[in-house]
Length: 237
Image 1 (cartoon, one colour):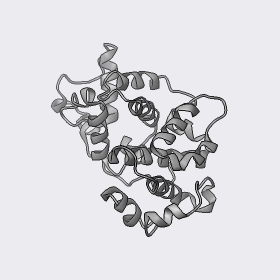
Image 2 (cartoon, rainbow, N blue to C red):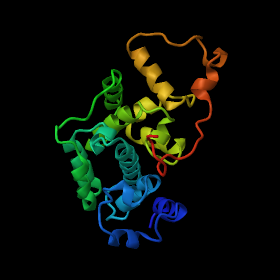
Image 3 (cartoon, helix red, strand yellow):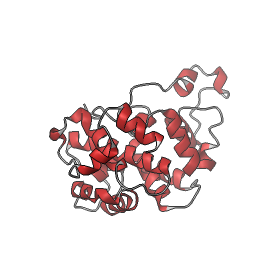
């Protein structure tokens, strides 16, 4: 068992072992069977209990993303893929590639073939990420769409992605979108950084000061991004 598995399964106390998780029926489609506060953790652990495939960190990230979207959509009644910003086909492809034991989640996808309603800036952010892919793999296409959709949520981005902390988000972006992530040299909050990059791409000046250190909004852009992990609590209240 990896360190990540140990943190999620034993540290959160969801189950005693991955073997016990794998022995239980898949999938947990009904949040009422576990309680909304447990659905994200249960979904994560079920995903991670299957056969290990691919890079361990990427697998952990994908499990976090699906678990966060599952918690949100269970509360709102929306299809799972809408929480991810993916079409049903792309969501099924992601699950089939990384978590082939969890294809039962396909029952939660939309029937219209769409990814849900997009905000005006969502396509721009998705394109920004796609233009700076590191590895050129399908997973980065999916990640660009997911990050763009989850960036619309109100919390810190790492929280809305269901990750453990901001460090995991930075690792994700440096791994899969390194040319873009490398430009965040002063460790600006990622949502603020994305917004600034999009504005600069359009030639729009949004900063009040020519130097960040002299700006009255410095704390808003560079302040700490601490807070509770949203994976084990409802994202929609």
